[in-house]
Figure 1 (cartoon, rainbow, N blue to C red):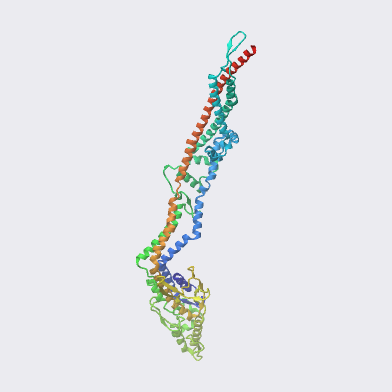
Figure 2: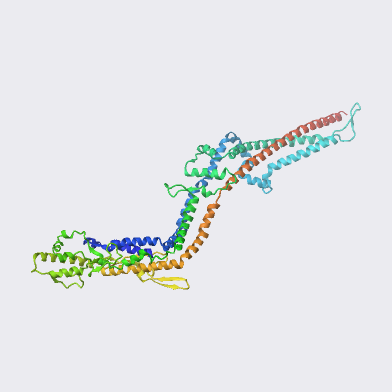
Length: 627
C-alpha cells in the first residue's frame, strides 16, 4: 500500500498536462519534489516494512509452482547422465561382446540349445528351480544326470558284488565228455555289467562331458567380461568411448565421468559422496556451471536466510518508524505547499523576443510582475522545498492589478485572471503593452482552466468500480485479532492494488496534492503499526515454518542423496559375478569333468567284468551242448 501510494504520487508528477510546457510554463513543484519522492521510496525500501515484504515475497517465490518447475527442470537436466546410463550399459555390453567375439558364435549355438543355463533372463528362474520353487519340467536335465549317476552307481555296486560273490550259480557242477567237472556261471553278472556300461554309462559320460564343455565356454566369456569390470575406470572408459560412439567432452559426458570416478570406482571405497555435489547445471548457455547443491541450497535456502537476516537486523536496530523518518517528514511538509504556486512562467521561455509579449516588457510595472505563477495570490514557498524555499512567488492577481492601470478590467471571469479594455487615449507604447498584457493574462486563464490534471486514485475492491482513496483509511485495534484492523485499504485479497485514472481541474489538483501528505502519513503510520504488531511474529514464526518445511527438507535432500551405494553394489556385482560366480561355475564344470572321468573308469571296469562273465557263460553253453 505504501509503495503504491508513493508510485501514484511519482506518476502524477510525470504525467502533468502537456499544455503547461506548450505555454512556456514549468511545474517547479514537480521538478523539486519528484526527487524527494524517490528518496522516500529508497527510505521505504530500507525499512523494516520493506524487509517484511521482501521476506514474504521471497517465501512466496520459493513456494511458487514456477520455482518448483524450475527446480525440477534443473534436476532433470543435471540427471541426464543417470538417465542415459542404461544406454551406456548396453553400449558397454556390446563392447564386451565384441571383446569375446571369437567365442560368440559358439556361445550362441550353445545358448539356443541350453538357454536355461546361458540366458541372463533365466537366472532367477534357475535359482528358484535349484531352491525347489520352480516347475518340475525345468529340472529335467539335472534329474537325468542324477538318475543316470544313481543307476550307474547301483548297477556297478551290484555287478561287482554279484561278480565277487555269485559269479557261479552254486548248483551242481557240470561234467564234460571226458569226465571233467566245471562250475555253472550265472548270467546275471554279464547282463548287469552290460546294462551298466552300454545302456547307462555311455549316456552319463557323454552328457557330463558335454555339459562341462558348455560350462567351460560360459566361464571363458564371463572371465573376459570380468577382466573389464575389475579394471573399469575413467581411462578405460575414455579408451573405449570412441568405439561406443560416446562423447565424453560434453556436459553429459563430464557428469558421467564424474559419477563413475566418485560413485562407481572411487579412490576411497568407504566414501559416500553427495550426488548433488556431482551433478551440475547452468541457468543459461552463457552462465557458469554450478552444482545442484549450489542451485538448491545456494539459490533457495541462502536467499531465504538472507531475507530473514536482513529483517532481524532491522528489527534489532530499533529504527523501525518510517513515518517519522527525516525524508518522509520532509516530503509531507513539502506537499503542504500549493502546487499552483509553483507552476511558473519559464524564465528561459524567450518571452522578450516573442511578438505576443515583448511589448509589455517596455513597462517596468508589468515587467516586474511578469514571472508569476498560475495561483491568484502571492505566496511564500515552504522552507522544505529545495532551491525555492522561503521565496515569494507572485500570483496572477499581482500582474492583473498592474495591468488594470492600463485600462478597465473585464468583469466576466469570477477569478483573478481578468483582462482589461485598454485605454485608447494612452500612448502607443502603453496600448501595445496593454494588449501584450491581455495576451499574457489570457495564457494564464487557459492554464487555470485546464481540466486534465492527473488526480488518480485506486479501485474499490468491494465493487471494482468505485473510487478508493487511502486518504479515507482508518484503523481500529481488534483485541480478538490482537492487531489493528484497517478499512478502505484499497487492497484486493491477493494483496494487489488497481489504479483508477481520473482527471481534475486546477483547484481539485491543488487539493489532491495538498492532501497527499496525509495519504502518505496514513500509509506510513499503518506500516509502522503493522511492523510493531507483527514484525517479530513474522520474523520468528514464519522463519520457523520456513526452516521446518522448506529449508530443513531441502538441506536433508542435498546432504542425503548420496551415491556411495552405487560403488558398493558395483563391487558386490564384481565380487559375486567374478570372484564367486565364475569360480563356482568353473568348479561345477570341473566336477562334471571328474564325474565323466569316473564314468569312463566305470565303463572300462564294467566292460572287463562283462567280457569275463559273458565268456564264462558262453563256455558253459558250449560244454552243455557237447554233453
